[in-house]
Image 1 (cartoon, rainbow, N blue to C red):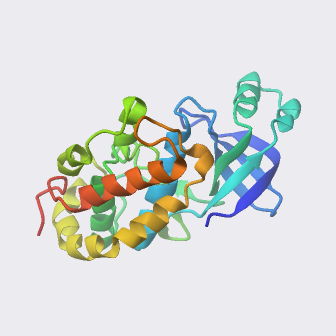
Image 2: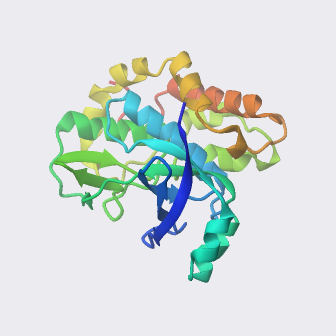
Image 3: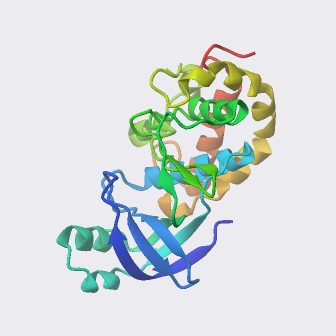
Length: 254
């Protein structure tokens, strides 16, 4: 399970993102990028981050480690920025912490990446319907010479439609995904080449274990899934349905 860490200090905002994440320090002496549940995009972004980060690791891709950050809004008393104060006050309790990679820098679409690795990234983004890894905003970091994936919150769009009840997983299963503009758009052939191995790695047990790492506090009840276990079961159902189809894979299955 994802460890829980108490926030001891808010360091600085990261104004590159629309949700205003911030650098914080924890009582484990770690430094994290904090994504706040009180940000405008809500807790579903945090849910997507946890699930897709877990999927990435299962596929052999690098993505920073995660913690659950327990935030006391009293920290806001020492923050001069009113926008940050409001965000801290709106996010008491459990938030998401992403391991801060000191010295890492963002990369663009011209980075040379091994074909198989680029194919796995493209496969992951197609499977999770991620719309936020374009050449304009790759959401990739280079750290110690290795490629790291960040910012998965724009994935799993289907859960934003659950406000009025759980929708049909078959629709997500067959929803095509457009690779146009993706930073690794040219890796379509390589995504098809890793398809069988990647799909086999995501067994029903693996999907259930990854979804189970999401804190219950972030799972909002919806008609048809009023309890956290029911909401988690819905995520597993949607991901399993997606995995049973290849309509979403650029170029189709190999």
